[in-house]
Length: 241
Image (cartoon, rainbow, N blue to C red; front, side, top):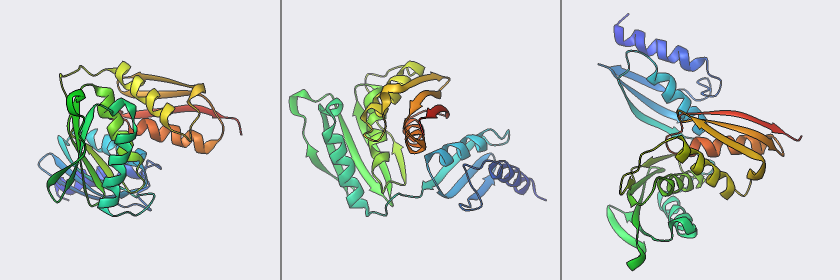
């Protein structure tokens, strides 16, 4: 057996042990070459994507990963429809009111909102094959993370590539992550955030508290996974039902 094939088999065996990745129903293509692992295929949800990437990165022979994993969308949508919904979501949030928003259509920017003299940043939205690509610059990490989560919440989104820069640069830390997760939970109309406690250590988020049912428990966890730089979520939420 070639060394490359052995490494791929080892990674595949690790992924098969994770029921969230669910290789049986969502098989992935893995290609290894000189320290670079390419992962391609459709996964069930954001948790499966991040857990698969984390497990693969833990292999000692993997130096870099080419991420071509896509989420099975809640609803199949055309790129233009996804792009319009992402832009509308950005426009609706007060935290992003001072950002100019541009829609990238066939490689050309179209201004959706010009923030004018109050502008503190700009966000460009492009969609290719269901993948939302965000670029531009914002004034803080929370705004960057918020834009990413809003993009994930559009039901047709298959992935979000958040290339937004923060200017001036901010040092990221667990407190920033906790702030963003709390904000996202508060914005989610399907989750009662008032009884959820959020902690983070080393970008591993822990959720504790009480929610109404299993669906809210799952949605709260998904919201945390959507936040940029969250590497793992420990869901200790209890349910009333």
